[in-house]
Image (cartoon, rainbow, N blue to C red):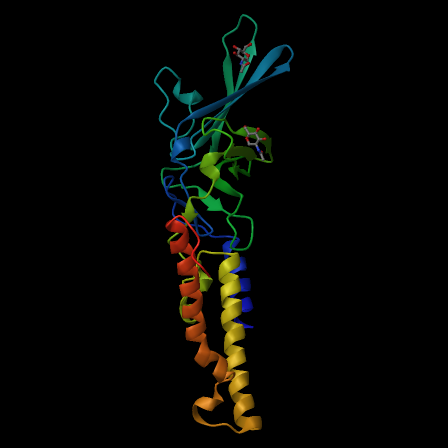
Length: 280
Ligand SMILES: *[C@@H]1O[C@H](CO)[C@@H](O)[C@H](O)[C@H]1NC(C)=O
Ligand SMILES: *[C@@H]1O[C@H](CO)[C@@H](O)[C@H](O)[C@H]1NC(C)=O
């Protein structure tokens, strides 16, 4: 049926929808997220013991903008390249010696033109409970580095909570960030591409999930009922004119049934407002 075909197309189109990146109005699969409460430079430090030294790994990231230039106190050779959104650096500490930066590079963002891509990896028109922030970074030893932040909607967490490092493997830094900012605000104004054109229903069913499905189902069933009813009346009953409409007697009564019902409800409501029940 037409509506189920349209829904199938919609679901497949929603799996990968990328739009220009705007932290305040980030669009993922037709839904809008305000990631701006997370707009700040975050530093994640961890140490591992690597006798006779200690190896410190530091990630600095800002999900909303490239990192600010590091101060002049940091030697140029120890700084992340310009345009990095996520910087990874390794510092080696040896007792009584000056710490030494042994690695520093961009895990996300190569130039000022780079922007992260938001991807929903869920299908269907439901609000995705999680989505991914992905940006390619430097190429190191023929391996393209990148960062993949999995945003998870959690309203009981705080936007100040830090992301957790899932791992750094094969050049991909995986982070997970469960914050209220990762919860959808509402339907986006950008319609999914397959929804356009001739399939528009008068209900404006672009945003809703279950109810718009039910509504289009209802419309299709009603249309079928009408067409089959008219055919039946024409071919079998051999009716003409208005008598072609199936169950015409019922539909003639229908407006009166509606107004009776509305009057009944109104008298109940207004009777209660006066402080008592009117006689029914
Ligand atoms: C890592 O180790 C260095 C040297 O021992 C220390 O200065 C630094 O504070 C440590 N960082 C963390 C996050 O523990
Ligand atoms: C949401 O965050 C709260 C507070 O950090 C945590 O206790 C809870 O387990 C999280 N819920 C989910 C589903 O991860």
